[in-house]
Length: 401
Image (cartoon, rainbow, N blue to C red):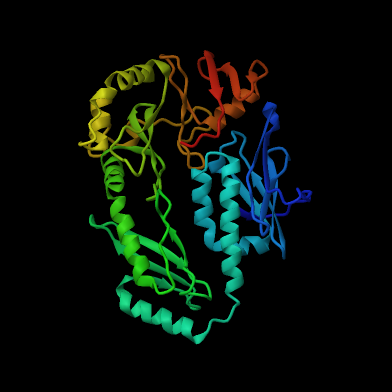
């Protein structure tokens, strides 16, 4: 995801306005979004085909970043190229960048997240070279001893990064990573957690690591129902995507049958309410499911589990891990002959009931673009199925799945 590279084109200054620009020149559509930025950092994205050179600057240095989008413009499969210096600075934040690529709905949102991550990384990198006073170490060691070393998962040699572990009331293990600056405890540490919602701590100079750990435990309990619901889905159904969901993931693509699935997006604050549902499959199969969902919404009962509600509303039983294997309801892409491609599974299906061949969106997009008989209108391509030659429509979007 994060590779060393060099952007040959130097973007011009935008006068400190902090503009973010994204274009899809291939489809003839251009849009811009401007957000206020501080004087200490700016992010801008300029046109260059599907590779977007970007500059993030500070009063002392400039960084050039190129974001390479795949042919289907799926942001979660994008690749970031930068200089080796910036790659070194962002090394400890690779998992966060990957998570943001998967969760951000568009390039502008990711640029805002990237700016924030870069500011934190630069701040922590610079502060590594600031000598800590003796009081810093004595205060930190005292806090760790009071907290208990059994709750410490990791401490780096410079005592600037600490990982604390905690167990929620259901026995799930969680980690919180603390990045401490030289002014601790006057200033709070940066906290990194695998949460589906923002985690903000309440801090005063007299607070300590014990207070952070207690706030972390309270936040874990507030998300208990959400994780209970997601764990039940992960344990009792076949989840196609994400392959290895994190605790912050709010989306599940659940297999219903052969080349038919439903993607749900759960509200972590109200996990037992009706989630957003997107059906994937041939129209003659998913249209009845959409009809059942619309007709049975009134049956949704927040007092019972999310999974049981889905079964009742859709009037189906999801394939069980205890009875069926994944191969029983999955089929390889008809173009690349693979099931998983860069972490994605086939999510496009021929609507003809006698065909029903599945494809990866990226494979089908590239295939249709190469056919002289295909035509395109904005982000929609009209063509024919590679197998049965029946009319086929593909809409390429950057919506996360």
